[in-house]
Length: 210
Image (cartoon, rainbow, N blue to C red; front, top):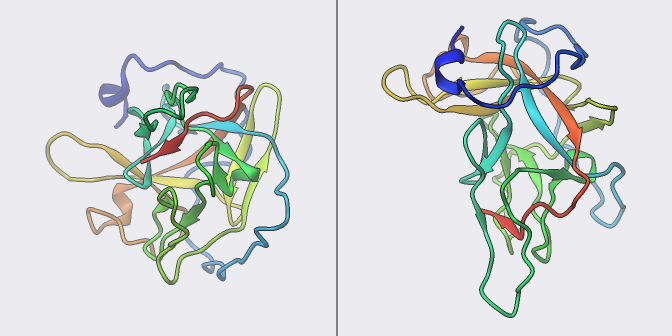
């Protein structure tokens, strides 16, 4: 039970959360080809938050955005400019928008979600459209549900990978792909999970994530 000590005290999801797909499936299958979405086409689906649902763990920490990457647990990193912007959202949670292709933000131009060439789930810096060459822009899929839905990349869940084999550990979110380059260099150190979602009814969630 790797996460019990690390995330003790975090709020739990209700026991009725769905098991959309069995966890622990082998890391296999072809990496999807880069997906170009027409930015002029509205993306379907309301804003939502996501939790990491581990099959054999009793806790389900939130997925948080910080440092242009996503993490299991902790707090998001957000920014609100000084006046004339005076009504920034609280920025206390991480919420996705546009079917999971972006973040729920007010900043002009938005912030786009992608999978890096090494498999990390990341997002663009505010006021910048830069995405590392070789990254994957999808396909992401958000399936709403009441009370819970789910969020996938290329039809699969995600994996949480420790940033170190020793000392205090944080867990970075990667796509569930066979050739991910993880911090410990051993993909067997990572834990597969489903991204279970809840509808976020008060968009946007932040001015921007940093």
